[in-house]
Length: 194
Image (cartoon, helix red, strand yellow):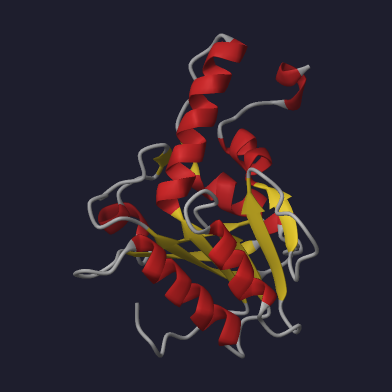
C-alpha cells in the first residue's frame, strides 16, 4: 500500500480473511437452519449494506473500498466475485449509493495482514480527505488494537466499526453488526428467519 495514497471522502477498510470466516460460518449455519443451499455472498450487495449501515446516504457517492487479505489467498472463498487480481482489484461498480471503487492489498515480504491493516487504518484516520470511515478488522485477532487506534483519532471523522460482538465501554466510533449485511448478501429474506 502506497504511503501517499489518495483517499476518497467515504472509505471502507475490510480484512477479507476475517470477512471470509464470518461469511463461511454464517453460510454453513443458515444452510442447515433454512434447509436450502445458500449461494456465495454477493460482494456488491454486502458492500452496499455496509455503506448503508455506516451512514452513507442514498445519493451519488464515491466509496473507496480497501480490501486487505493474506498473501496466500488469491480469492475470497465465500463471496462472488472472488478473484482478487482478475475480478476485484482496480474494478468498480455503480450501485444505488454511487460508485464503489475496489482495491485489494496483501502484505509484502515479512509483514503480516494485521500490520498492513493497522497501517492502512492509521493512514485513513490521519487523512484530511476521509470524512467517513467504515472499518471491518479481524475482531478476534487485532480488533482491540484497531479500536484503540480509532479511539485515539481526531473527532472530525464519522467512523463505524463492524463486527460480530459489540466492543465494551464508551468508544469514539459507532458499532454495527456485520452479520446483518452478510444475511442480505447471502440472499436470506427476513420472513425466512421467523
